[in-house]
Image (cartoon, rainbow, N blue to C red; front, side, top):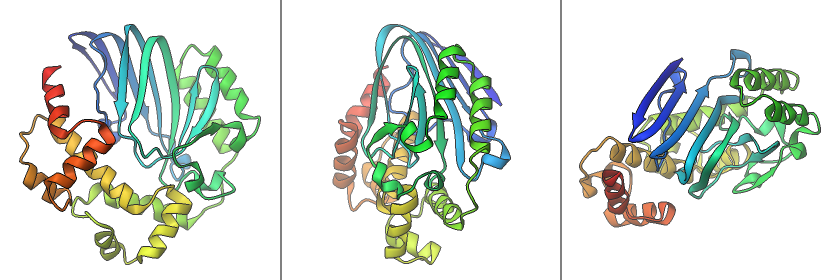
Length: 283
């Protein structure tokens, strides 16, 4: 596990993550300029990896409110905060949340497709929705809710409780879960996949079958996943300080032209790429 504490202006920022996970992607705004901020990301044990992708926890102690923004991944989350647990489906919009005072959140990020065995219906029914975790997991989830209230944000206790909880509910093996996860991973890793036709060519699965599989297991269509990961790539380039060549970037990310790229980015982020980049440079 990698841990890194750094001073950013007057803020103390601690990032803890298992080495194989790498740095978090899709973060539009970095931690606040003042106060304390901690972000933990850990892998689950091997027996839970077919369904669970990451355990994560964010805690903060801030003297001033701070607007945290991200471009969500194509994953379902189980989230513990303020004494209750909720399930959040894939969010097609930008995630925005004002962090203030002293608080924290613990989450379970499921693999693409990995949440489907815990539901009685397709994952697309959760798209852009948040529901009480009891609606999915029953009253037993209240035991972990109580632990979160009493544990003073102790990550090891929360991870241990989550491991026990899900080991008592291991679904039967489902090849469709593995296929959905593998296809989404391929989109993430293969930057030459810019369209659904590219995905069809690389997987040998037809468009209609891909659409049905993604609707059932991932919760959002393949085109959305491709676009979201390409926008993640653009944000990563900005964060790395790379000078933009808009025409070339649009081509590399699979857009018809730079105008389509700019409009797509602005429709989700609320700023043009140039405005967003200038904001990063000003921080």
